[in-house]
Length: 162
Image 1 (cartoon, rainbow, N blue to C red):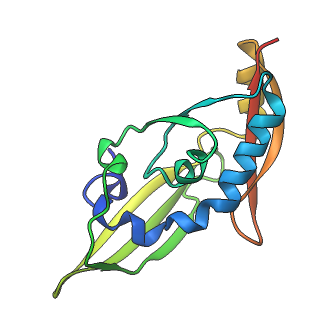
Image 2 (image 1 turned 90 degrees about the vertical axis):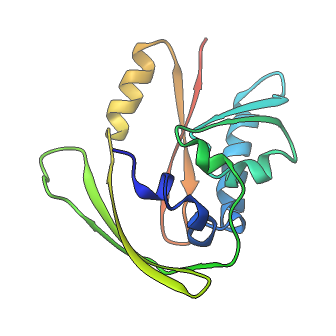
């Protein structure tokens, strides 16, 4: 089941995840891609582009094509709305590679208010599993840090076929 945030709640998404928050992340991706690719890449295919927040910065350098499982995410945001968010991450089964994130969203649309619960299951595979899967199909994997905020980083997998 698709989480509400990528369907019914798309008109509020820009309030939860503003474009400006993606400059550092997009810069890290761009630098990793440019170091890994020769000749210098001119085009970029972004799979799972979401609302296009990274592409906002990529388009300054690349000719971009965006895709996402949620077509609504690639549309324009609606205005005149307000959102607050309470996020709760928890692990119902510490023995697997997944965890659950529950969101409570109080939403304002003009003078109308409502509250919505959305649940996401995240964390499909460990880094080691990803590296093994990619190497098994012939990619050389280079791992780069991906900034989230001042305290956390994730991982960028830069993959090349020899």
